[in-house]
Structures are given as structure tokens and as C-alpha cells.
Length: 366
Image (cartoon, rainbow, N blue to C red; front, side, top):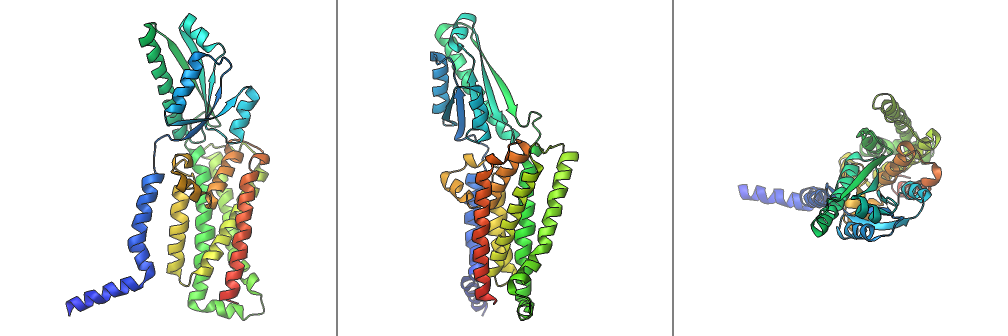
């Protein structure tokens, strides 16, 4: 009899796809994401090189940077204006700028300088990047010492852009904004609408003279208002308590936030359309929103350090583009021309999700 009860419970578990997904799928997904996304190693850092001398020493250092596996030399810049442009366009995370007549100064005076200019919006990552680059330069310095038995000194000068004080708040404020908006707009909206469906009151609302579209809009409007209040609260706390300034346009920062709010609200409606119970909505939100938002959006861990497959997956996460846009406008102080890509992607996501949600609700609820 006892074995029969055990068999019955196993059959219940095997028949419930959601239980099987939690029991077997979640551990696999978590170990893969945590194993590959959570890393403090420096990998595939795109760097630009400013090399006015083009001599033997600079070329050997560049070769060592490229061969290290930590850095990928993607840009060769020739003017100071280009140095600013490659950072604004987010093409590189580090610029290695050699002094003029680098090798000549090194051989005749025993000293030469090189400047490491790094994007410090993420201070921990910036510290590691400059540390790795400085170690490679120090290894070349030691190699020269063994070759010529002369005390050479190469002085790396580190310059932290956008966050010279190295405040960690510069990193997590955009991420917290994205996370809070995702939780409030997507998760809370999906659960609120599914609650109406689960209790049977949604059908009562749909037989009223009000069109279904306006009923859905009425459900999401409070969360839209709450999200705006939260954005204002976060910005006020960031500026006056944490000391993180809004370096760019407040108007375009608000525009980016509003577009993102529309995206995640649409995502919440879509989740509610494909879910029949609050438990299902919470599971879908937790699996498809919360964990990817934390791990794959660039909020905590740099996307460049992840395997290619996870980088591709991160492209479909709205928070990734929102956080990148907020960092550019709020922290780096760039104008709207440098966040056009992020705005276009978020707007495209909003159109797709709204269209899919409307179609789903017409099929299921109209």
C-alpha cells in the first residue's frame, strides 16, 4: 500500500510539466547561467591603441596585449578626437596611449610613459582591466631588463573616465532602475491580470460596455504611474544621497525610461495572456525575467566576459538595452545620438510585445 502511494506521487509529478520544469530544468539552467555568466575574469576586452611612434617597443607591447587572451585590439586611433569618439560609441573599454618616441625615450633615458584610459562606469571591472594591462607592460619591462641588463622603467598612467572617484553607485544605479521597473511593470502586471482570470472576474469585466483593450489599459495604468514615481525616487536618492549626478539630458533619460516602462508593461500583459494561474505567471516571470535580468543584462557581470551564446541570449533581454542607455545618458553624459540603437531596439520590442499581447487576449478573452 505504501509503495502504491509513492507510485501515485511519482505519476502526479511526471504528469505536471511545471513541476518537472522546476525540479529538473531549473537546476540545469541555474548551473549553466551561474557557471558561465558569473565570472570575475577579464575576457575579450575590446581595446584601442594610440601609437604615434610605431616603434619596436610599442609593437611588442601591442602584440603581448593581443596574445594574452584578455584583450582584443579592435581599433587603431590616430588623433585625440578619435580617442573620445571610440569611447562615446562604446567600441572599446580601454585605450592604450603610448607617448611620442616611446622606444627612443626608453633606450636613451631608461623611462617611457603609457596612458591607460578606461571606462570606469563599472569601477571593479575598470580596476581589473587596468591591472591586467599594467601586468603585461610590467612583464615586458622585466624582459628588457633580462635582455640588456639595464634598469628600464615604463610608467603606466591610469585615467578613469566618467567615474574618477570610483564610486560603486555609478554601476548599480542604472541596474537597480532596470530591475525595479521589471519587477513592478512585468511581474506585478502579469499577476494582477491573471488574478482576474483565475477568479473569473475578467469575464465579468469583458461583458461590460468597455472594450477589452481599455480594460487592459486600466489594469496597467496604476503600475505605469508607480513606475514613474519609482524612477523619480531613484533619481532623487541617487543625486542627493549617493552623489551620482545626472550628467546628460534629463529629458532623454526620462524618454528612455518611458520607452522601457512600455516594453516591460507589454511583457507583463503577454505573460498574463499565456498564463492561466498566478503560480504559472510567477514561474514564467521568475524564470524568464528575474534571473536573466540579474545575470545577463550587464547589471552585475560584464556581458563581454560571457560566452558567445549567452551574449546572443542577452540581446533579447530588454533590461540590457535600458541599462546601457541609462549609463550613456546619466553617467557618461552623452547626447541622444549615442543611444539611438538602444531606443530603436526597445521601441521594436514594445511594438512586437503589444501586437502579440493583443492577439493573445483576443483569442483567449474576447
